[in-house]
Image 1: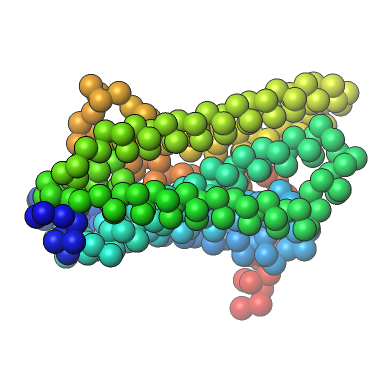
Image 2: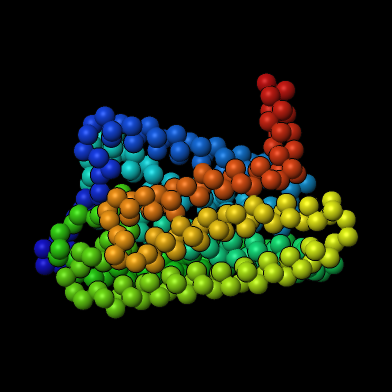
Length: 310
């Protein structure tokens, strides 16, 4: 293959060659996917239907649930189909689409999590200015900026990756099309592009980390000044879910792209990719619903209302 135009399809990494284990993988991923659809779907429906949840915090949470649904829908259904039909093939256009949507949705989610930390900072440290700084128009603009950031980043990375000539086969060592794995198929010198990709990822993670740490340092100071224990508990309960989601997302993503080469193995790469691409969309709804009494009450009201109507 002299260049990428000669490649009409890629071969994804199979979890196993044993038929029984392939079916087990299909049912396991199906259960995970349905759990993600149910959890995020309930959060979206509850926030959209309950007027009491039409606040900036829940508006951003609704956007997070949408991103999680899109993220897991980009990779898991294809992997399930590959196991069910015992095939590793994905078309060139399908691979490019996977790369674009993975970068788009993960990039937008990083940006949105940063905005959500700002929301918690303003709510606790500057409550009197909350309505001014986070009005409905400002929230829409912030959410749009997060989505636009993900879109532009994905466009740049996808164009950069698929503009390379690919001549080292078409086997992608991952269960979905991932940029570092595709770069390894290039017959040109990809060192600078790989380094550039790592630098961009590291800078993004570092900026998010610094911003969130500084926000939560200020939040902790403000919370400790609250005189009542009930008030402190309420403030912490609104911050803990976001902090837990950020920790899960940043640590798994950072390890996936910044892990040292000497600890790499194909099986470890698959496990880490599952951690950052599959686990967060399933776990995020649980984290937010378990610690948020207001959301649980709205969800219970919605479910009981639907049940009584039937």
